[in-house]
Image (tube, rainbow, N blue to C red; front, side, top):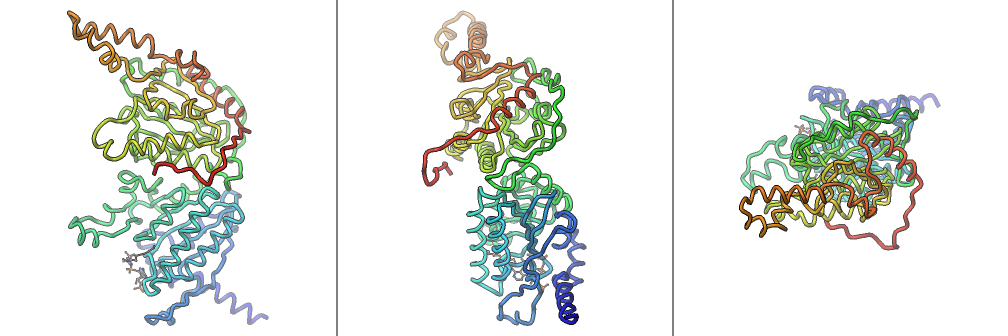
Length: 513
Ligand code: HXC
């Protein structure tokens, strides 16, 4: 028995070495952790149990039978993060560049099946040169097996992808199907075709970083939801993200202990400028409402005219969607609509109540927007809110104009509670624009058209630039003192805690894509 145990010990030690000590050292020289270190820092101490450490590839072409590494370039297993069960795989770049062979894919699929059957999050730490070139279609089949499982697991268990190295070609589509992508700045990139192919096909000269680095996907494409300055920062962000999310779609949101206190927040009364055209920072409103230091923003640098992220209110997780007057006056455009719709759908999948903070002058006009399908994309957000069954509350802090009023979680599309601050303006459009249209003839024929416009504008503003007409119709449940917002929301979300909605039976809806 002793001898057999010795063989096992030797094999496990060999599996830990990946592609060998020199290649592990190379990871460090590149400023990256090794796959095993990433797993180590992610999981609670001594909680990780590895599955399939002794798996080897079956390839016999190109002398591959001579090159065997235990584990075949991916570490798979389960353990806990902050005491909660999670499944994790980490691709090992030191073994054939972390490339995906048939057996490498089988290991990931086995893990995905376990995560789905047992209802716990799946975390992928990606660092791979893509399909194992020596294996041809076997590798492509392995990718498709993973994609298929990503889709089956979507909306059932949370799936988080950290991209910590290369991720190219069709390999990008597994992270893309998962709920969140996090990229490490400077050491990761994602693209369907790399700079060389781009040069050949379009004659553009571009670096990997420009084409698909973390900065590009955080600002231009919106592909990544989070970025991290290094591997450790990435792991901290994954742990933080997990803390807001339930284990699966049947589970309730995580809640931290909460001791009720004085929930009055004086600072909220001073945030909105007297002049309705002056911006203010909606993030200060968020900070004034949620539990101290609990706001965790997602896609921070993409479509900054809308802010989305998680926070805690009275200890419980909520999702926040908020127009940002500091950027494009908080207007809804193509990118903001896509960003918010995706976030709303994630929250709805996983029972995370939604808080909408609204200050929106409408949809952004222009050929660029129309030609890039603001119709379809705006409809996405409308659809996402309308189908969401989680508790949904809106607070209108200032403007709620036009179609954007309807879209931003209005009562009419199923919001449960709609509050407005006294400075709210709920109307078809701003007073000036409205007066110019409906009083055009009167203004044009006036002795002093500017004075007439001003007069009409003031009359219109008095009538419509307030929340009371909407409140009189019951579209707003209550006009509240801003300082009371946090207290009102804590009570309203508690009141909605057991909300249930039965939707008509159907296969699935057909969201405008
Ligand atoms: C097999 C691979 C590999 C791959 C890298 N390696 N990629 N082995 N299949 N796809 C091996 C290298 O041969 C090398 O082995 C080791 O990994 C490290 O690679 P280096 O090139 O030395 O590292 P680096 O300079 O950091 O460059 C990393 C890289 C580059 C940019 C990822 O290796 C590269 O371009 N690889 C090929 C990428 C690619 O075209 N993949 C296929 C994409 S198509 P040795 O033994 O020399 O150390 C695809 C389709 C998916 O993935 C379809 C899904 C539907």
